[in-house]
Length: 287
Image (cartoon, rainbow, N blue to C red; front, side):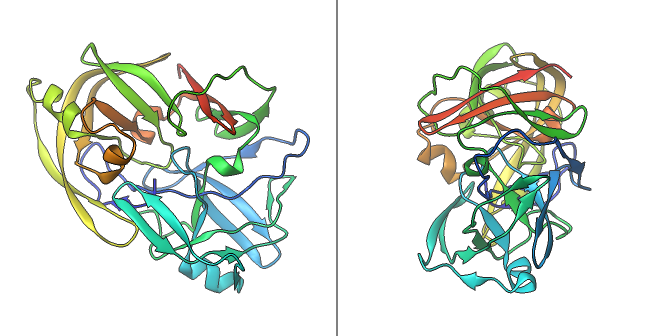
């Protein structure tokens, strides 16, 4: 999801979304992932005008590059014009641009139409944008955060759920929660319904701000969970930011406990992802 968060102890987050489209070509070599200073899984995209460093973002369904990256590459506005960019903190209307001749590793990409981001997605301003679900559409993938690589894999069986984003049932403190897997987040963010569950858990609490793509700030509380269990992944003593983000309302999750699981939870795990036209299926293997 597009946006960023000011760093906070144990759950620093840069929140955001982005995507570039992959060519539906044959299998290619694995793509290396690099970890940024604030926890993003970063891929390198090569273009005729220079390289881009993009956060891999499974919570993204629209591609985006920073305005600085667009200017550096000298991209022209897309004929299709502006588009709505969805973010954790809401939606904004942004301009789109045309990018041809890009490659992700050995994969040739078709013409891309990235939206313009006013801010870099990471706290240090070192990344150029995001790579998300529409780049992966029609394929199955393994995001190996233990070995730091992105791999095409044989097609996986997939019956998508109601949401377009990758989601899976999990438990926090042994109580049910819907977990949305978002590699574009450095730190995990839950909704107020989850906060009400966590209010029964003793421990230190703090404050933070979630910063949207347009610079808007939404206050958050830092709360502690004794345990988080999602498929093959289990964590203990996890700090989670709780915020009333508009995206929870948009997804119909205002009343149900829900969590965007970021890289603080996912680090070292192996995620399998099947991105279909009707939705996405995923699983998490243990580190």
